Image (cartoon, rainbow, N blue to C red):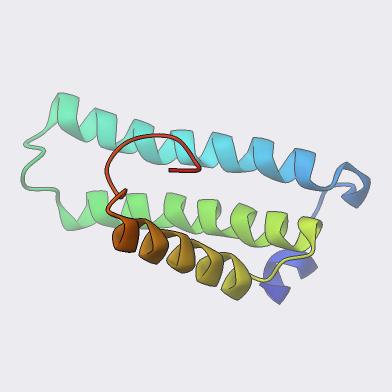
Length: 103
């Protein structure tokens, strides 16, 4: 996470706003890679090259997640632990399926 922060090239005064826009853009690029594989290729047999391209885009997504965590004062570990707790709680209550944040 420290390297993401050290390699920031935009004005930090924008904080999480810039990070979330970057995150959305990069997640869109991951989706676009998969869309083109689905449209143009045998999507059941993704090539090593396709996987490497997707891995690069996922790295960009991860960079923006790390930066956004820093912008908001979280660590990646805190976010992961919070998510695991949420999923475990939903599993215990039988609410993994469905929709809504507070199910």
